[in-house]
Length: 303
Image (cartoon, rainbow, N blue to C red; front, side, top):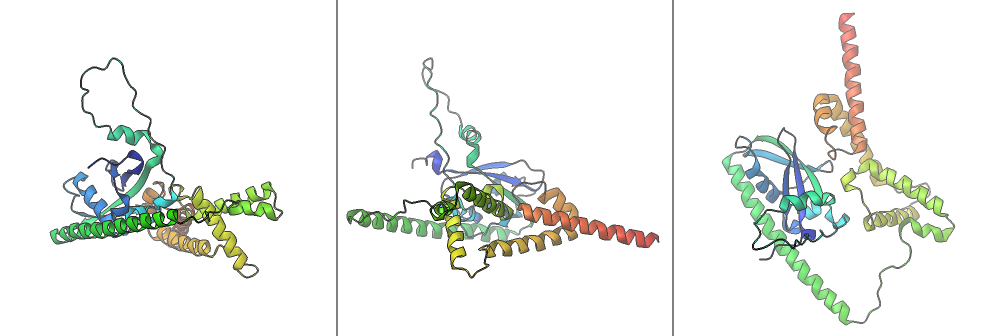
């Protein structure tokens, strides 16, 4: 079986919450690889005293579901494919057979934009029955994902062939998309740029840097925001989902900062990509409230 091209590979960097070094991994089929299968790939690289512990994988501030494919969990459809790697230089002095070398690490270092960091939290020790159940569930889930993926691919190719055979005109929009639509309604380019900057600021509060939408994904969000703003009642701002997410970040951030201040500062705030910026600020607020209560109690005891 031929190796998949580099642009189809998914390069992952597993960053552990303990003192273990980062673990680089490559996934050849993210559409059919569930989170459970990724855990089984991580375990052989762990020390013997941690190989049987419970693993929890976190990306973008959310715990990855065990039975969900990595393509769906990591939102790979919103990412742009990396540029193709340059061909290896040809040397006129090279003669005979060249030594076989493992270039996986070199390709991994060259394409920095293709790396996706996943945080791995190591928990309690699992029993042998739990490990066997995890392995069997990983195999079953991967088999189901492969059946669904190959079935959908075959159906898509059949529909594409039928659509090409029928001489129908293309219905793909060719006009301006997103906030650029406002240019035809009297808005200036400066107004559109200012609106887009404000929109990106709102998105940065609910997304980590590696999950920020770009390109077509960003235009789709702008389209949805314009459509929702046009159909809402007067005074609606179209950010209901973001407001609910902000309340969730503020609540959990303050609770974590108040009841777990040291762990939150050492782990969550130090590691990039675990929490959004709003949740990090809420954690800092909870830590400050904890300190205020501590000083107040200390002063009352001394008084």
